[in-house]
Length: 78
Image (cartoon, rainbow, N blue to C red; front, side, top):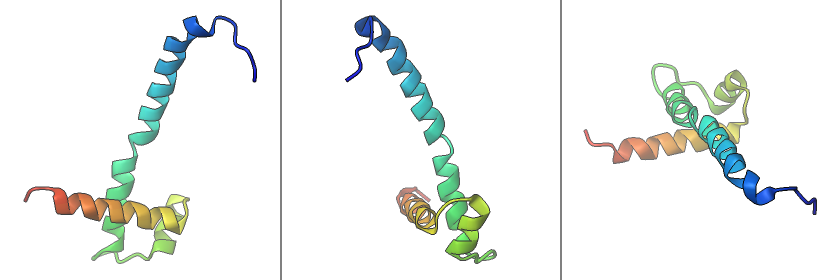
């Protein structure tokens, strides 16, 4: 294991950097979820492969996003 000099002093700064990075990665997730669901339904009716190819991700990820968006829609008040 690598030893970091002054690790205790650097930890708060490094933790804030990691937290900000995680927040940036999570920001597009709700959009991707809603887009995957919307494109799979009418009037678009795209299949998972087409959405995945367009987004540059795997089909499995598209279906995971679409399922999460559908679950979120069920929970939203109308």
